[in-house]
Amino acid sequence: MKLGIVIFPSKKLQDEANSYRKRYDPNYSLIPPHLTLKPSFHASEDQIEQLTVILDEISNRFEPFQIKSTKFSSFKPVNNVIYFKFEASEVLEELQKVINDNISGDMPEYAFVPHITIGQELSNDEHSDVYGSLRMNQFNYEETVDRFHLLYQLENGSWTVYETFRLGKE
Image (tube, rainbow, N blue to C red):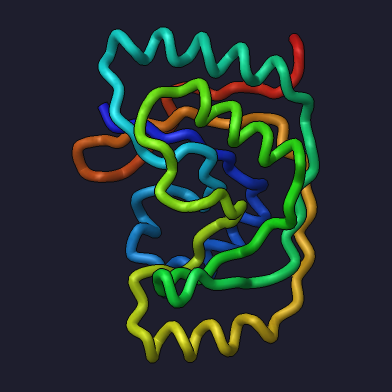
C-alpha cells in the first residue's frame, strides 16, 4: 500500500491554496493542500499496524506548535514548482526528522523545505509568468498545528486519511 504523512492546514489556508491549485496544480483533485512530513512510501497491511503505534508514540512526544507563511517561493531551477513557503521552525523540523528516522522507506530525495504546493508541472514560460505575478502578493498565515495524518493512496490515484495523530500527551 502506498502511504504518506502530512499536515493539513486550516480550511482558510486550504481555500487560499486551492484558489491557485485549481489552475496550476494537476494534482488538485487527488489530495487537499498539505505540508509533507514524509513523502510517499510503501508498507504492507501488517506493517501499517506497527506504523500507527510508532506514529502515535511520536505524536505524544510533541506539543502543538505554530507555523507561519508569508510568501510564495519556487524550487526552480530544480523543478517548476511554486509554493507557500513556511518559516523554519525547530519543532516542525524535529517532527519531520523523527518521523523519517523511525519510519522505514526511502529517505526523502530533497532536503526538508516546509511548503504547500500551489503549482507544479508548469512550462518554463508559464512558471515565469505565474511566479512573477504571485511573488508580488503579500499574505500572512499563522496557525497552530495540533495533528498530522497518515494517508493512503486509492486505486484512482487520490489520497485519503488512514489515521490522524494528535500532538501532545492525552
